[in-house]
Length: 201
Image (cartoon, rainbow, N blue to C red; front, side):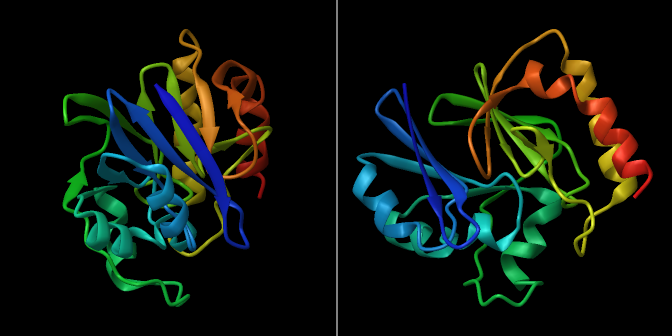
């Protein structure tokens, strides 16, 4: 197994390539990610989106077309791929698989679980592979995703933060959508703090 990462665009959104069993899975291909992805994959099989924000899906359409691979996106964020709701000029893409909340998908014999943690977006998810969480914009190193954007939800974020506390018996390496990696146990120490911050915002 190998994981490559490169921050993309002005927002420095982490694009990941997970290579396992000679298969390459592209996670959150952001702004201008296409050249880097194409230079670093040998056998691409799928694009996985943690959520629908433009800086995470910008290169979906081009990579899908050029690499002939499907897109997996949380069902509740699919509208963002199609409609560019923030008006940034992202090329529309269509998810081939609209992933239901908290479900396991098997792609070329490799299993991923999409843990649903809405709040940042309606479909915001963490993509689990073995002992790794690709956490998108839900959990960061020392922080959490914003809950004040269009289509965000303060109430959903609070519920999601309470939900993630239930994972306190299984540590994971957390690879977030921005900044450097962390661990689930490290971030769980601060969840009550963040719940208070969100409640009082």
